Image: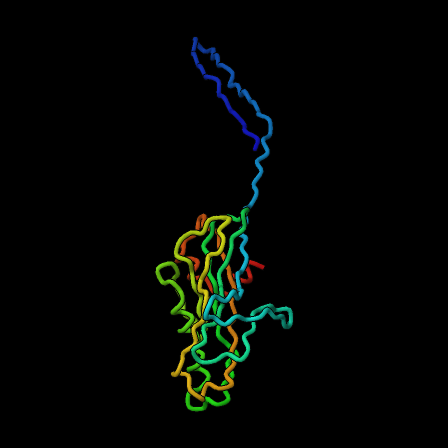
Length: 218
């Protein structure tokens, strides 16, 4: 920005008889060299963790890809199985500090033998099982309905954070899941998002529509 400095000379006025003498009003100007200010926007960068690494007593899944979407597939699961399903995120080393969230959606429930239960109830059951594995002291949740829940980490996540885990297993009910659950299949979709911590807060982030977050991130 060019700065202009304006100095005003003093005015003096004297009257002698009928002759007036006036001083000249002088403007003294000056300028500085132009300074170029460079502004570089920071970025928020994160990656999703979605993997299966079964410990003793857990059932592992296998990676699969369908229509460009990658995930973990679990075949021939049984009531009482504990599925190794590790969901979380990492932030990049060059990321800004951020508030982060993970959306977990239970969908495409097929239960051909559960006429008396219905898929909506099973969807809610699976969503509740996942919620029971999340540490409520660390994560806040917003239930969008129909098995769709967004979990928000309660504090700012620094750059280069590794293995911030939301949950690591899905324990299926045992005898409560009777023959009506035979041939049950379902999907669990996960997606992570973040917003810079500077000049924002958790309440603002939680108040944003997920669709708007995704659109802004594209």
